Length: 371
Image (cartoon, rainbow, N blue to C red):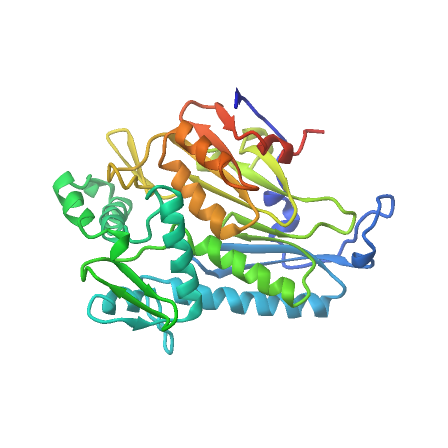
């Protein structure tokens, strides 16, 4: 696997049509059409009320009415997942992960199947990533969250947690203390001080589940972006694949919109695939010239410093979300070996050195070539 520098055209993710409400526009008649999508028109919709981010769906449907029906159901699903996986707020009539964190240390808590499914997958991915992706890491992540929020609220308060504080919290992050009874659908903490944080998987898992449900309802062609976590359904009417941009982690936020700024490192083509990126350029604060971001290495208890970002392509968005976090927190050779051991999974590592990129062996086959 060799290194190379890439620079491609601006991706679909920031095209003007993406953030519009909705609108028609079929495929060109000069391109070979998929008969199953004959007469389908293009629509878009965006929401701002789930997972504390922007969710956008671009897709094709047989009519405005059918599109609205599909999107109403998809949005309702996302709202439910958002409420179930929230660790900060409670909702009337919903037993969510905030309730689990508050109660599961005293007795088993009965949970929705969607929480059980998430936690079951998370425990499996903990093993796959050698512990680098750990939903039981909440006690440590809460410390970093509180320090980050304080610094962002008032830069004069910026500080770094002491290793003593972090190590004390890490004593309560053993995933073996997360006891899941799938038959009874209960969650129990063998360590009463353990806390869950599903930031490394919740958004991706939810995107995967709502996409599958939408497909079962008949949605045939769409690209779902939940805060940049992309999950594609099928292809476009002209049989072309969906495209998604990989953000340039070395540019400043202000430079991300204009194409000439190099706001995107690459454009990836996907069909029934997911693209998820973890990076150090979104949730962070700085102190004495050092960036302290949210991706914490379970071994060092400090922000991982191997890369600027890691992107993962996989058929399952939950899997891709878990892997992007896990790979970000492990050395390159270890990450490459893990990716090569997994079927239909590819990755792209953006190194700390600007413009230095490493691909897994099959990643380049998904890159959209510059025209």
